[in-house]
Length: 105
Image: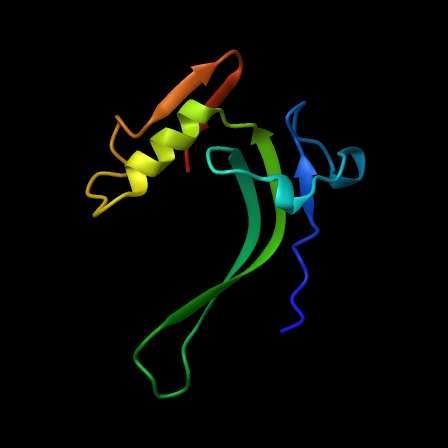
């Protein structure tokens, strides 16, 4: 199909800065359990005479905030296996390591 890996991925583990000041990070190196910030533009529209509203987004950038651990990967597996009923509750698999707070998703 001719798809290329998304190239606007940056290493923000040392802090979020202007993209020109951060190192690029290979999308193929992102792993389950990594904490990411996603920059996107949301579009909302409806066709003339249509009551339904539609939405889409354009991905602009991905920032790696914190690398996940093996424990994080297990937490993601547990949180996403079977029907997820309470994914955004206060107990949603959050870990604290130093200055990095990672919601494992």
